Image (cartoon, rainbow, N blue to C red; front, top):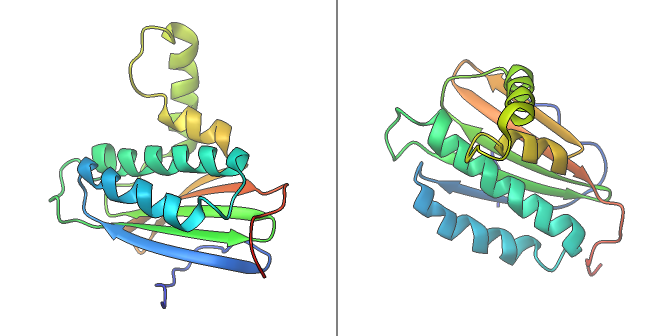
Length: 162
């Protein structure tokens, strides 16, 4: 499968596996993304890497649907790329919504979390993603697309057969 290429800075290292999925802007598509991720990555990654990455994938997709594509048609695609390198896993989620300032939003969520963390039912996702990744980045490309990039180092051996 040939994956679409974008202008963002790619992770470094030997690429071992890459996976791609395009979905509509519909939370019910979580029923597709979860088994897709489990099928492609469940046996490749140790659980201490797999589970946090699954959580951030779910959170990132949910945020794209609920916030980035809030006023867009359901047919607007959300593209997910998963690249597994020797020492890193990278998940990229592309959306077509308005851009936002990730750092500013993270600071706002940190402040909100300090003030009333037990009463809040939402707006914790970015903090969760930030805590489960080694690098969390959000970029705008071509004035039309945004990409949430989530990277986590792999410190244990992959369950890969070479």
